[in-house]
Amino acid sequence: MDSRLVQNSQMAIRKGMDLFEKCYKFNKARFLMSQGMYPFFRMIESAQEPEITMGGKRMIMVGSNNYLGLTNHPKVKEAAIEAIKKYGTGCAGSRFLNGTLDIHVKLEEKLARFMRKEAALVFSTGFQVNLGVISSLAGKDDVVLIDKMDHASIIDGCRLSFAEIKKFKHNDLDDLERLLKEYEDKGKMIVVDGVFSMEGDIAKLPEIVALTKKYNARLMVDDAHGIGVLGKTGRGTVEHYGLEGDVDLIMGTYSKSLASIGGFIAGDEDVIHYIKHHARSLIFSASPPPASVAAVSAALDIIENEPERRERLWSNTHKMLKGFRDLGFQVGPSETPIIPVIVGEDEKAFQMAMMLQEEGVFANVAVTPAVPNGRALIRTSYMATHTEEHLDIVLSAFKKVGKLLGII
Image (cartoon, rainbow, N blue to C red; front, side):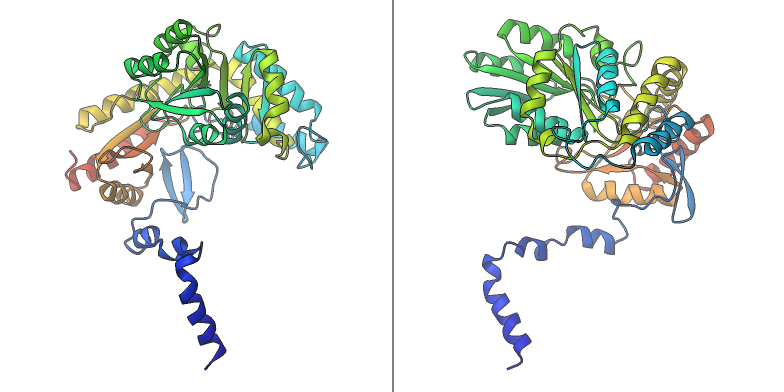
């Protein structure tokens, strides 16, 4: 018998115990590809501007988290270029050992001032912030209470801790209090998104803060989508509510308003010092590259010195919220530049995204498990740099596609 046939036969016999078996059986993505309804890993050939190029075609981008339009800002790009000239392209090691540059420390000081906290610590990605912070602070005798709609990085950070993890219903303060009462005799930390990334609603922080005080709990806010967007001076959800003295830890990412890649945690100096020496995702990861660090520093300056960007962003947001509602779309509880168009079934959302693409609009799809069953959506998000013309074209495309699909 051909040796290859023998080998294939042996492989088939062993397949039932093959760890890769799930890979061979996974066909959902390939099916969507075959149907022309695969909306992921689309290749973009230009900067994250209001208009992008994809497949040689110009499209309007309403799927980016570049809220203030800073990823292609001349001052941000120049800061990154100058950092590369001085420091090179990487740090060749972790923050813990050889990878801490003076610009890392200066950025941490700047972020602490900006967030009005004693100290800050920068990580290589926002995902790593949540992994490292939660898993280093929460131990086997503790409990972490999280909103059911919290970001995946929060959930994974909880999984890496030895703490008991309890989810409460989305923005449901009664359910949160029920859990706080149940675990009154344990060390407790509540972790919530400031702005929930799928439906664009905001955490009820005043009520949550009141509960933390009543039940002696700590509070961490993941403000990835709030910083640069919310608050009188763009300092995020905590500033929006005037609670900067009441929230223990504020987490942020650079990949939204701060125009780069990375993340940070800000809080009391003693707590940050502890995280610095216990967060595995910091200690065992390569340091953020110089260009990224310099870009964030420049973006912070722009946020503080150009408040008109935030004003334009909110003008665009209000226009689109009203426009979608007037057309008859369901946009859920959105209060921010993240505006979901709720479609229903997953397949219809895939279909709608591709039809919008044909109309020259790039929008994102969110399906289960990112959203509840039967609540698949087209996730749109807006920039300060979108023009009225851009937005009118987007509304026109949604109107056409929504009617064809029977959504409106």
